[in-house]
Image (spheres, rainbow, N blue to C red):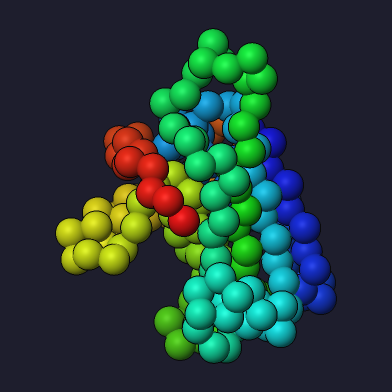
Length: 181
């Protein structure tokens, strides 16, 4: 999995290596083709507010936005399905400052909140949504299972990031249908 993290937020204390490892862990656990590519951007509140208004029609900064790149993305896609075996899954945009405030309210670290938000954004790229109560329950169940598995994987290596390809999310669920964004 190619995961690209760009920190344009000004937050110098974000562990980009661990965020990259988490994203790879989630993609691997969700059985996404290893040739898929993902971009994770960390942005300032102003930039996030601008994106939120432009793409969601809502004022103010939000915590996470997901932008799917390949409309026809299918998580079960295989190398033989295309002449070019790589596909850009999309972009997950995070706002560390919004995550910090939410983390304080939730009583956990900003890193934990960023991991939750990144996982949430990836699930959106894989077609999960939470517009309906049943969809929300399914998405949150998978999200929580992935994060719990990530915690186990991190604990197993003594708090360091798990090796790439470590898949502790046994049975996290299969990706859902692709939803247009």
